[in-house]
Image 1: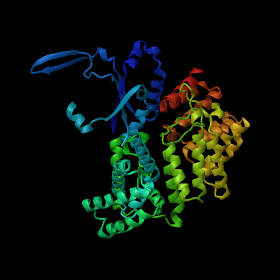
Image 2: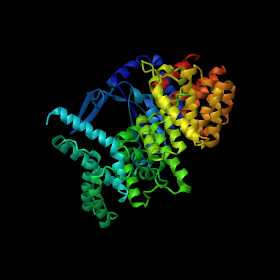
Image 3: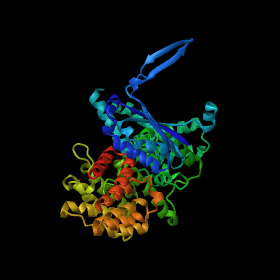
Image 4: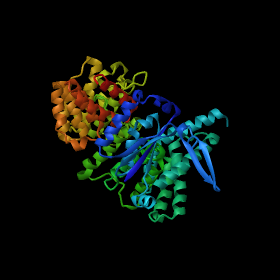
Length: 123
Length: 413
């Protein structure tokens, strides 16, 4: 089964990204990725730019609506995601607890939709 | 009713609930095998106590009052649900014993049967501890879920399923027969120990995946010892928990920093708990039936000695680990043995023991990598040490442990 760990950061955590080579939590993140790879559970991951760089688009009654900023107006914002191959949600929660993001903000664990359904969407 | 009295009553209800919960649930379910109904009935009785006691005063025997109220509620619940098992004879039995129990303070303590039911081999082992925490201590699913890293709703469903199995799966409410007793008791002890969580503070930077249920674990161990006073291993288990608990205040610096055992200030250890642990361990050893928990407690007692003699006798620890390894070759034991061997005979000796562990088994086991990194660093194998540190850091859950290991890795890279 594949699970997404959705990583949410506080504004303070985002603010630390100004110089990624000096990022104070870089060591913890790298070690975490190494552990995921060594355990053979890593499928993929990526980090997102800070939420202010987002632009949200909708079409309502045929009209375009464009909005500055991220979709949800919450304090903690989506900062990145990791996809893992794991036997159960229990294992996914364990890896979420080890994720540096869990003590810096929050990590949501969400199963990916079943493969048949994903194929249905992507063709 | 003024607020102070209400507050006082609430506290009395809480205290009685805490002390009597398991006894009442065990007694109410021993014939019906229906834990969920017994718990519902008891919680109705507790609500009723909160409304009656402030008006009428706290009854002379609060436990008997709760039992009577819970029994009435249980009869209603059973009638209402028309539970198949709860036949008329059961209701009659409940009714008959209800008056007599209300009059006497003594009703049989059935908690031991309940503990054996919770840790029955037909129940999924991962549910043993949650069931005990709920039925014996009255913890709710949300709290148990927090401790076991399981969503509250999921934990609630799993507890419900386990109780349904107990009710309809023919799991007997009885003390196991002599020939099964040691194996069944081991499962009960394992479940209690699992509530305690594992504090690997005796390994350099071992992650403490504590469940914050140390108090509950100790409480359960005390209950078990009270019910089986001549079981050496039960006493060993309690001693082990008390030794570890004694070091709680020393495990963190004032700034929240992680402090490994070797750097802990023994002045911060609780001498009261250590003394109690020593008494239990000494008594346990008198039975002459050494087991895993007594050996683990003995290892902790050598660590505790540092408060008195100012040093750690690692060769003694190694000897206890050697015996322990023969009894339970668990990953934790072998890693601990390697750490002790390194202290007693040098890092090469420790590393050789680590090398003998199957590498598949350790890919997700944080303490192994923490110890390995520490030993490689001592041997000056910096590149390998750095790799091992990375895995230990990546597998750590406790941010303080992660920070400690990052610093240790930073010392040479």
